[in-house]
Length: 111
Length: 113
Image 1 (tube, each protein chain N blue to C red):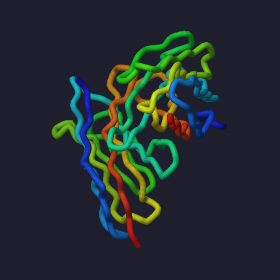
Image 2 (cartoon, rainbow over the protein chains, first blue to last red):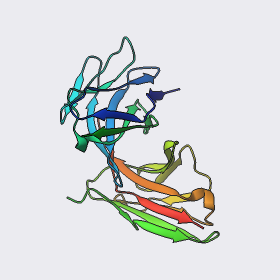
Image 3 (cartoon, helix red, strand yellow):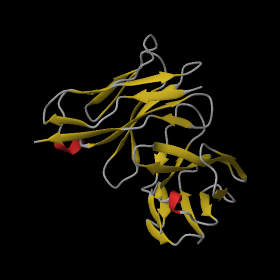
């Protein structure tokens, strides 16, 4: 069945470091792919999405490219800030009515 | 535009008590969902609804009931609370179609003692 696997955390980076959070999916077809971010004490917010192969989603300096060949949707940012400290969730949506979420990756950025 | 509003934000229940969590959305979304979030477990789907008057079970439905009498509201009920239901509960809604993501509420932190 459909599923999403993302790298386990926690991840700790220094400010201005490069960020990669890996996400791979399993699906019988080609799902839409999403990254959500959860700041402490808040609900999840949509960060970016890609709905077909080779699409690149981007927002707030974050990027992710839908790679059909490797069934991946890795999240990247060239220079992280302290304000990026949060939990990041990868998710897939196929033809059904619900998302499949990864277990989340906690990111802490230190000054 | 308020988005998705959950009430209450915090609640402490004694074992065996009942309560209802309310989720309201003002975006005219067709689909609504209830999730619980526990440390190390990610998000787990409890119940969902694809339209007014319809509901369906998710991954962890036992001990919960839901109702969607109006399109904008999705209620989650706990008939007899148990300590295992201590969690943070999130409601989400979205438009129909695979290109649309969720809009989440800010969560309800429930403690059952």
